[in-house]
Length: 287
Ligand code: 5RP
Image 1 (tube, protein in one colour):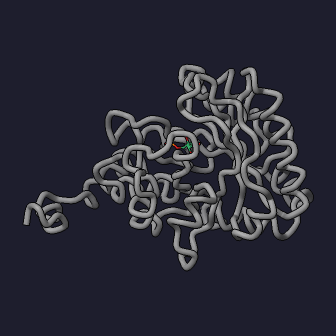
Image 2: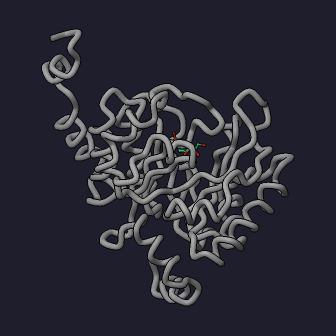
């Protein structure tokens, strides 16, 4: 971060806001590995996230932040676990609808404070029929977040139109979110990602998107995103839909926090993945 950016941040943020942000984006590296487990809010029992607690628990020691809805938080996350929570507060459409952008705010700031979360997250659907509605939702959330010292993350969602994820579109969507006043933006990695980073004066993290073909593809995405200026990832399916989710998140951590390259991350993955013998021990059917 440049000195100017740092100074601007000091001026605009009060203590609570700064404290919450520094729980998510670790001051030691200025980066974050966020674990996204909020897919159920529109996708229902997503593959490998059918039982959220079972998916989340083994991964939490390696996550700087956990992204969930309040329903999953209250029912599947132990309040004694101390991982900071990024609370999804937008929704209103399901995967059954063609247009996923018809969202409203679905959890109040008062409940977010009651749940002691580190930040709230809301999707915006720029360029869709619901552009204005979602941008106004975001503005309201930023106003309330300012009152309570609660950071707001905007998610530049594309719904089912995954091919929208190019630099021109994402730079526009991220900039709009920053102009509204969010503290963090989650977007997608794309070709010419630096254009997205350069046009966005707040920290960016990248989503993983649908499961990629290989571990190397996932590590490449994370490596390039961080090298080009993202402060980390908010990744879900490419971690927990992998056969070896813990090995996967450890590889991602190496890239985000230790500046590992893709080869080194693959080494971390291979060292931590289950061997056929450990798989047999863990699964009594094969014992
Ligand atoms: C769901 C989300 C997800 O949190 C986001 O897409 C990150 O997860 P993934 O890496 O699986 O794409 O916003 O609506």
